[in-house]
Length: 113
Image 1: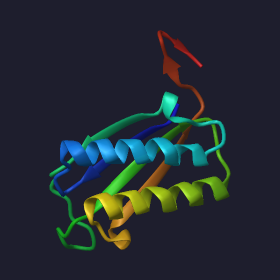
Image 2: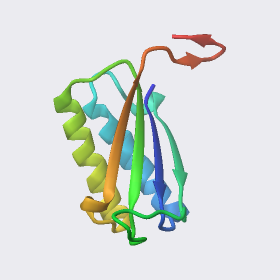
Image 3: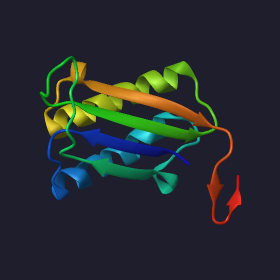
Image 4: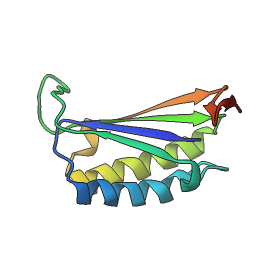
């Protein structure tokens, strides 16, 4: 049950969202036991954002996972997600954050897992 919310101050076209969706669907497999079949994504674009005092292109991805993962898996996913946003949205890696949250209780289909 991973969820990745991408927020940026640049425009994300429908075509770019589709490309990012496909690539994140593959990237999530870097976390053992996770796959696109349970991946939920959201996009917020054109959000007024400042990073390092400037409004140059920037983004943050908030990754929520049911359960835990090890540091190596997180490092590999951070690299993959950063590459996706750099390549698809032309945002410099030093202007991209990736934040992780591990969730112990996750509700789905009217119950908790």
